[in-house]
Image 1 (cartoon, rainbow, N blue to C red):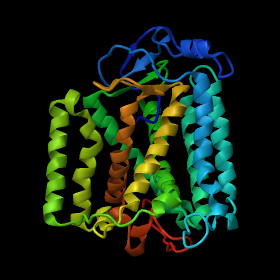
Image 2 (cartoon, helix red, strand yellow; image 1 turned 90 degrees about the horizontal axis):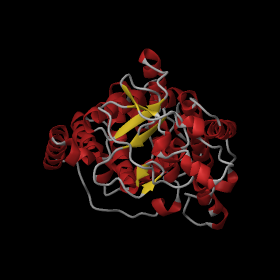
Image 3 (cartoon, rainbow, N blue to C red; image 1 turned 180 degrees about the vertical axis):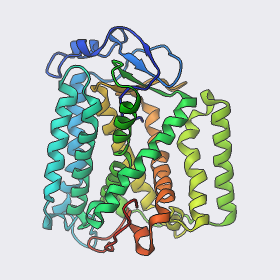
Length: 393
């Protein structure tokens, strides 16, 4: 799930640039399909030797346009349509009508709409400068929706803390780029004009939106009634046998990925959580085990759902972008939804848990007392404490 299509320093030329043949969305489906076939290839950006370009089997551009619109409507409207219909003790939705969308939410919608249109409508290189503002708009929109639904949000609780999400997100995603050096599951496509320091800066800026988008969407998902109604589950406490078992499995997975990446590449999306989460628990940092130890699994569900929603938008917006990424995944490279194989979307579920663990590992030295509760996945409306995390928490 790479987030920036800017060029790496090691590239291999495929066929002629695809962007010159890319048709606007208003053209016919046949032209849209022709625009993404291998004979109109990009220069390839890859961290590994050139691999064969596989035919694209995603949906047509016309379908993407409709499905993308439905996705935005589903995220921003579907839970709220029921708000006026639900009453009683379910505060996850019934109180929505009392609140207004903050002004920065409309700014976010504007940013997303403008740069979405530019990323899909222009020819040539554009996503390297359009990715960050588009996703910044997404983050602001989602955060505003959270405010409208429960009266608090990541941005409302602490502006420095919100900026810290972007700062932590950069090194967090670079770790997965490092892992991709071994697994070679995705490559970037570009015209070869972005190199060196410029590449690093633009890539890091794009990577900075990962954690704010996932955590914000997870908080929004945490206000949905079906998640709030989830009852207590089995208790998974931070006891030594559990921590040792998790860490042992995580280390084994990491070794298997390094030794046989072709067979064990899925472990990339699980090993990090299994290693870092026990470390957080042992060091007294905040962890999901704090919740699961009480039989509380709604936070885990909200994280996974939030990341899956983000995954849909990542893959949808990437499809007509340039620069962009594409996947080379052994064994499951079939039934593509956009560039991603269908089974690949399952990787977003443990990826969300890894982000949560990495974030709290990074910010623990800066968080004090109530600041540890900054990321508030499940809360009752107006009951979230007002916390002021340090600038990088």
